[in-house]
Length: 186
Image 1 (cartoon, rainbow, N blue to C red):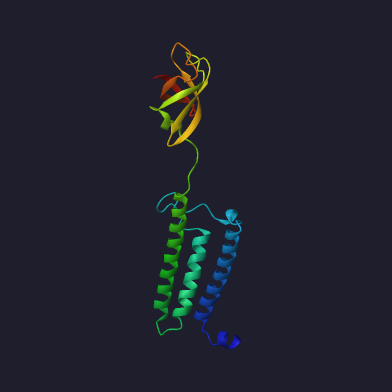
Image 2 (cartoon, rainbow, N blue to C red; image 1 turned 30 degrees about the horizontal axis):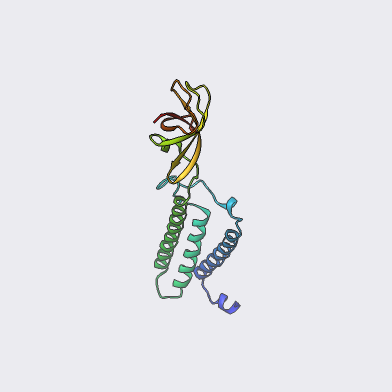
């Protein structure tokens, strides 16, 4: 290995050092990801170039940049291309890698779902009283309503004078406190 290393010029040595070091860090980061240990190692303060979720400058992006920059430059340095052209192509390859990593993680964030139910979807829908709902918003009762093929139980109140008894069919007319429904007899 030493004769090979000694045969390299300064630019080639520089590019190989970057390639080997960044590849080693990439492998360590990949192992951390496999074992779920990488949550605390990502910088969340990305530059808002495209949106709040698209983080161009991130640790993963920088590692991708240096890995592709180093290997592209090291491999091209074995060709008769000029040093300027080698560095230009290596920089472009690194930037493409950075953009691809940023886009990959941006796309992955779009696959995530919050999982919390939005009670606004209930407005205008029909449900059934599960626990009696006293009139004039005296106390909360409960209704069962099906939204998006999901049956939910929700707190409910009514502005009507009479109590809505168990089994009554009701229509949701509003949402109060983000989780209490206002209903009326249907």
